[in-house]
Length: 106
Image 1: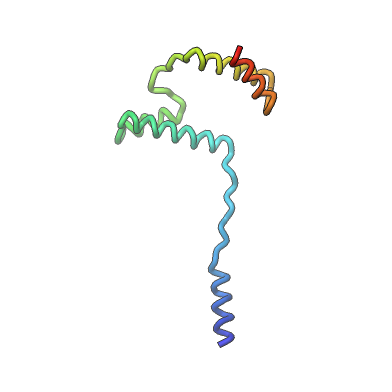
Image 2: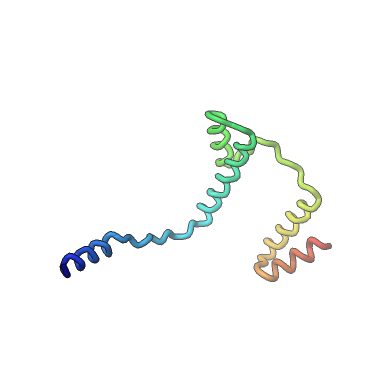
């Protein structure tokens, strides 16, 4: 009886798998995943199916835009400009946040 309990406990321990820790995705993988989500939403919005969806997704994932570029609103243009300035100055963290705040206000 004792042997049976020990054997079943040993089998239980051996069969319980330890979940494998998956490494965090790289920046490139995260960017690709985000691009895939965005392209998938766009294809769904356009109600594409079959080969039309497949070709749209291929172009979208390759970075080719099927839709003409939209003009930026004044606020978006200002944000883009301030963001470029902050990047040129290599600002990070609190310094970047403070710079962006003053840049967007003025």
